[in-house]
Structure formats: C-alpha cells, structure tokens
Length: 540
Image 1 (spheres, rainbow, N blue to C red):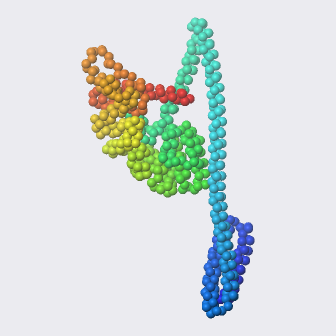
Image 2: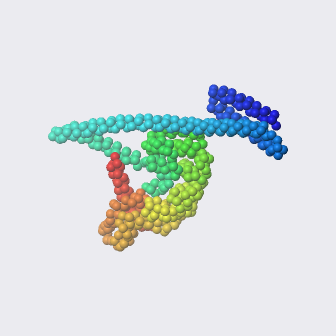
Image 3: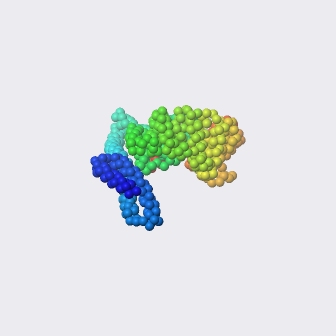
C-alpha cells in the first residue's frame, strides 16, 4: 500500500510539473488554445482526484484493521494526512480552472456584445450622415424657393404697375400683352397648386377596404403609400425592435415621398449589417426584409417583393414559431401582394392561415381578426364566391359592433361592403336596408335622433319620389335641406353609400329619388375634398 501511495504522489508531482510547463508556454497561444488546455487540465485533475479518493479510502480501511489488532497507525495516519493535503491542492486547482473557464466565457460574451455595439454605432453614424445631408438639401431648397417667391412677387408688382400705367394709353397692343402675361402667371400658380393636390390625393394604398370613392373594382394605381399605412403593414402587430425603429421610420418616410433611390440602398445596407452581426436567420433580418419588400411593392417590383416576403416568412416561422403575430403579418402582406397581381387563388390560403393565427393568438372577436376577415372577403369577391364573401363580412361586422361600437368608421365601411355582396346575389332588400342604416346613423351623428321633422336624406329622397306626380307642371321640387353641407362623419363611405343606394333606386325605377341621392353624393364629396385641402393648407 505504501508503494502505491509513493507512486501516486510521484505521478501527481510529475503531472503537475508537466502542466505548469504547459501553462508557461500558453503565454504565446490564443484564447481558444488556453480554453482547450484548461479543459484538458480539468479532466486530468478530476481523474487524479478520483485516484486519490480511492487510495484514501484504502488507507482508512487499513487503519481501521490496524487499530483492531492494536498495531501502530502513525505511518498510516501520516500517509492519510498527505493524501488529504494533496486532495485540497487538487480541489484548489479545479476551482481555479473553473474560474478560468467562466472568465473565458465572459470574455467571449463581452467580445460579441462589443461587435454588436460597433455595428450599431456604425449604422447610427450612417443614419446621422444621411439625415445631415437631407437637412442640408432641404435648407438649400427652402432658400431657393424663398428667393424665387420673392422674385416672382417683385415681378408681379412691376407688371401690375405697368398695367395700371398702360391703361391710360388706350387700345395699345402692349396693354393686352401685359394682361395676358399676368393671367399666364396666375394660371401657372393654379396649375402648380392643382398638381400638388393631385399628388396628395394619389398617395393612398389601402390594404383592406377598396377605395370608397369608386363604385366598383378599378385597376390598381401604383403610388407611394402613406407613412402610417406602410408602417402598419411593415409591423403588422409585431413590435419593431428598438435598434431598427429609427431606420424603419426613415425608410418609410422616404418611400412615402416616392424617394426610392434613397430608401432602397438604406434598406440594403441595414440588411447587410444585420446579417453580419446577427446572422441571416434572425427576427430583425426578417423585419428588414419585410420593409424592403413593401418598398419594392410600391415600385411595382412584385416578383422581388414576393421573394423577400417568402424569405421573411421562413425566418419568422423558424425563429418565432408558426403561430406568432409576425408570421400572420407576413402572410397577410404576401396575400395582398398576390391579390395585386391577380393571383387570388394563391392569395386565399395565405389569408386564411393568417386569419387562423390571429384567431388563435388574439381571440376570435379581436378587431385585427375582423380586418383579416375583410381582406379574405375581398379575395373571395374577386373570385365570385359571394356566399363566402357574405359570411366573412357578417363576421367582421359582428366583431366591430361588439368591440368598437356602432359609431366606429369600420362599421359603416363593412356594412357598405356587405350590402354590395347582397347586391351581387340579388338580395336587394337586404342591401337597401344596410345602406339606409349607414345613412341614418350618419344623419343622427350630425342632427340628432330621427323624428317627423328631422329626417335622413333617403327619407327625403323617397318623399320627393312620391310627390313628383302630385306637383303641377313647372313647380319646383321642395329643397331637401342642407344635409350635404354638414355630412362630415366618415364622408367617403357616406358618399359611396349615397351613390350605391341611388343606383339601387334607379334599378327600382325611382329616378327622382336616385337623382336626389346622386346630387347629394356629389356635393358631399366636393365639400369633403375642400375640407381636406383646407386642413392641408393649415398644416403647411
């Protein structure tokens, strides 16, 4: 037994000397080599520890036997003490090795965080440079515009002065030239204002409901999306990470202005940085792919947008799970894209899957579920599936009424869409009832409860229809009040409802009632557009 102890002790000393020499050589090796050697030392120390425990147990057993025989146990106790000291030294070595491993892991984590922070700083510096350039360009444009306005004002004053002087010259042909020039200047200013108004009016892209100003399906007009609509489509109920929020807002602002030559490189650079720091299969990469896809969609590059959305969908399913709201948002955006390309059959299953996810995560009576039902109804309507269209619109209407109340704009929109579905199926009475509900509610918002003297426009139209044969020839119809002047609540939907109910009256042969509603719709639309222009001028 003593020979074994001596051999084990000598082996431990040789092993420790060898490892110390190896550690001394580690000063020139890399961090990975140090970590690997430390792991090897830990394994060796664990083995040595086990051997010492076996020897110690043997000595303790021998010491018990010697005590029973009343023998001398001094030598055995000395060996036992030496083994215990060796075990303590081994335990200390193991603890130090484990501390080194923990430090190595911590250093790796710190290095990774440092790389991420460097990437974020680099991206923020780029964004800051872009913002500085944009600010400088805007300031230059503003200064140039102010100078031009001042010059035009001076020219206008000079021309008006010349015109006043030439009035005393009689029929001088130059007088006519000055007056013509002033008229041309005014026409140029008016045309410039009209072009701005047309640009503002075309900046609309609704992912859910069709344009309220049109009676039927119209060809898609590609125009920049409004920032709020595009932001909602990009996030889709999924919170944009803090490190992407500034870039996300900047890209959407550029895209809404039609400045794709700035928005696209900005997205691509951010996407490249994200893939370098986080890898391709990361939720933030999927978010940036989704944003870039929406920019491509606005440009009419549907194929590239579809590829990016499919890539984003795969990443989100892999990293977030198949039932995450972000997956539903990507499916919805992909379905809308297919719908714009006329691929309604391919879009329908994507929209249905997005609906299932939102029902599962948010509940079956959530407003986002109602919005998804509206999108699904539109896809079915383009395929002529009017029974399914009716079912989806009825469900959406129930949700809106339950969660948002009767005065929410989505209620009147959905009623209008449901009435259109009824018309397609020949259910004219049901459609007429819904149209009247929308107009009655709009009237009550403006004028209060309906009674004998306070009647909505459709009642006044039907009264004019009934009285047209009772009036003498040449007697004008009675006025139907100023309803059109104050119908401000959800005016686009009200205008569409007026036109649709007017068309239904024409189908029934009620031409006077139809003309009344159509005239009111025209006036309501004009007043609404004027109010929008007035608000826009105030903001300017």
